Image (tube, rainbow, N blue to C red; front, side):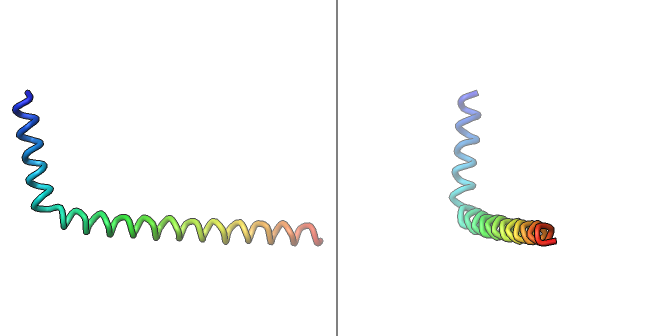
Length: 62
């Protein structure tokens, strides 16, 4: 069991060494994409909140 785990760990380490640049590039792209989506959603939520407060203000004025 331990020998198998060590072999898997070594394979994973070798894979990381050979492919870590691609992995880092991919994860960086994913992070940027997720940050963009989060900020885009936040902006959308802010606009919705402003629209809701605006419509609430119109209701109060009438």
